[in-house]
Length: 466
Image (tube, rainbow, N blue to C red):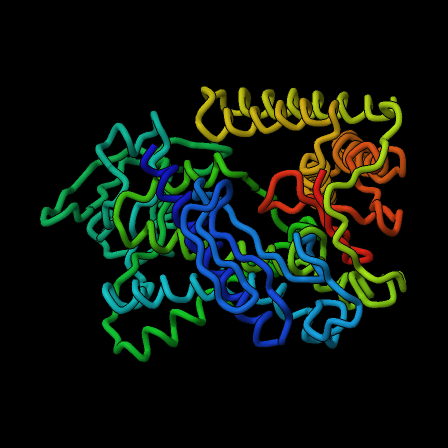
């Protein structure tokens, strides 16, 4: 439970910093920032600075940023407003989106700078350390343990690269392995077993790491190089995965928490947190909606540009609404798709290896239920959440399908998400979710997240309540 809280708090801290940085970037680019919220729900603390409302939400999870002309707001956005999003140069419109992944990478650099300043910069040596012991192997029966430093085999000193050949050279005869465990020197006799014709004792070794003390400037230099070098390594790994040179091994939120719990000392926890932030910084730069990198690409291609807006002047409509018509029967496909996604998630959690439901699993299952319930009455916010989740599912399935020769997964993952997105893009479905603007009659109405029953049109800039 503590690990879950630490992971959530770390991600929330980085997200809050990225939202604040995006807001200040937008203001520097002379855009009108209507609202910045850290957390969601009813505002507990509210501050006003110019035209911007800064607030702290009741639920300290997530947050949002509203830029006039880009996002639905409870204020009209005129076509002639020089501070509106659509009236700023395209390069300036891109910056608020790109600053979010930069902040995540910045957090990774700050964490590694602190780690290097306190514990020093790690450096590998030729000394061999036991990284793993196979259960039931000759090494386990002989008393070897993870963390032992292998000093010698049959009284001959060995380096990390010489451990395996020295054991195989014994030809199945008992070998005396000298290890250092803490302050003690132990001589353990182990008889190798033949596996696929090769003499093995059942240990995995790695080069030992030492720490080199550095100055604060050098620690900062190395620390901020870490996310750049790690991202380069990830990109090389992706190329090797797609070219079948190595096997992919991915995990979601449950895997993140499980890996975090394995780190017993603070330095390893900080390193894992830095790796997590570096991964998120790289992922958010991918040119795929709804990631910031995808939004930046859409902005360059004309998304939310002035040419998409009608000549009609924005208006304050007060209390207004349009009839939605009958329930679109095609939405039944979305119900079916959500049910299949929930069943698939449950099967994934309960298999390989089986594990009980935890906090993450219950939360995700409840999210599916809420989404399914909200589709029936046409809750506007449910449409927005569904589209973003399905876009993420589509790209995740596309990446996984490209890394495995699994046609069924490609069809179910990519095809299912794409089919549900097409259903949600139909005009009758969008009208069911209150997306027709009473002013311009275009499908640009979106809910204002900061106020219930409040809507804004991202096309003409009008606003109203229902």
